Image (cartoon, rainbow, N blue to C red; front, side):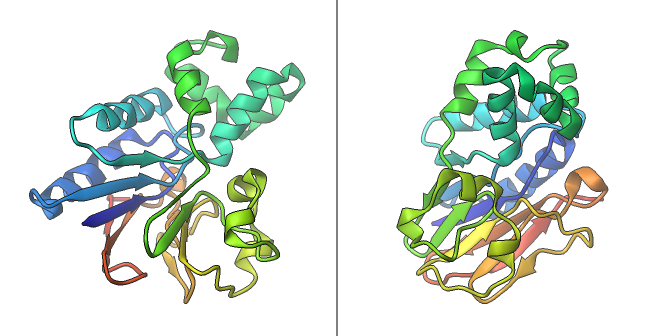
Length: 219
């Protein structure tokens, strides 16, 4: 089984299409799993197109496609639940998501899209790895983590080298140099696609924790 973990997309549908072409060529009929690490929306030009692409992939017969929630999906849901939170989301790129659907208010988002976002899990594990958007709290056991930390944690997670019992694959903190950050116990695959960087997919095989390689979209 090949596993491909894809970093923060942020509405960059062209980058996503390029990565998917590379995965299709590389997998060449082998069993595969796709894990998307969250932050599909906001800031980039085509959040609607990204979501449509991911949902199409999930609907393909026999597909094993995991889409995790990111903090920007969480922001969207908060803006829907609390009108006083709307400006926060718009300031952080929500305006571009609304524009991609041709609307100006979150309550006009397609109900099926909102339902899909609500359904997204905050983590996924295979035998050797834990996939999560932002990271894990080193003060808690891996199985006792809070959704807020999985979606939002940063310095408390990045500032230590902590063994959670499984190798952690995450995004959330953009790498402005466009290079994944590989450490002993974790890998950051947010390579700043929406900031002029690249979209990254890390390649994993059964039998080892860390990646065997990467695909990158053009800058």
